[in-house]
Length: 53
Length: 243
Image 1 (cartoon, chains in turn brown, green):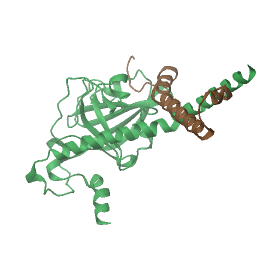
Image 2 (cartoon, chains in turn blue, purple):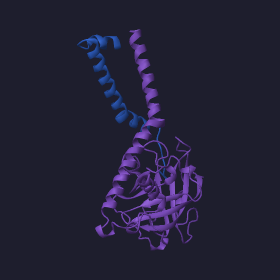
Image 3 (spheres, rainbow over the protein chains, first blue to last red):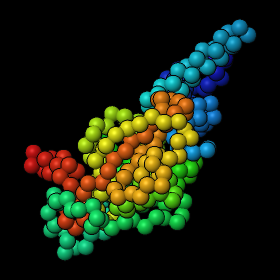
């Protein structure tokens, strides 16, 4: 999978490394911004108030 | 084919590890600092509203009797921000905004708020019980260290008018259904209040919703903004100016 991705990318090795770093950063940002908060709220609900809810 | 499955599994493992790092630590560092920034912004707005002639006011004010403090009007709009909470034991930069309501999406999970006021309970400065809730873990975790507070620790509620000083009194662990902690005299329904109480509720144990940790404080002093900030809040700034 990652080998195929490496072959698909254009340019010399250092350009591919830069592209991969950008992709990894984007993936991490997406995880922290959307996926992790969603997982936290859905799988591990927190309730801090007293009452019926 | 086997190689692809293996790579997917490794990727999934890395994502789960990243999630745990975010969930247990990094997420609260990021969200907490965003909430502190929002709180500082609010403080600066209030300070900027001080009239020019009062600018020469002393940096450090003297506490006045709690009965002199103006009662903040309870906001009618949900999620409206009306005050900030400062707790010196949690660090000099701990400033979390308090908004009306305890809705998760509207207030408690909000990246710029963090602390919610139970609608219908008293407001700062009012005789009765000013009850608030906040996360103990995740979403900036404003009350993460609630149970580390010690008797007598100062808790300041800051508004445009000034600082309401509360002294931490005690903590308690209760069931999630214990709504009587919100009574004007906590846990004593029907009793007429004579003190200005602050009640903080959060989850307990850590990362669980099985019980609630409660912190109680009582109002001990009032500092009008034009007469200067409490020494505990002014000290770090003035010390830095001297040094």
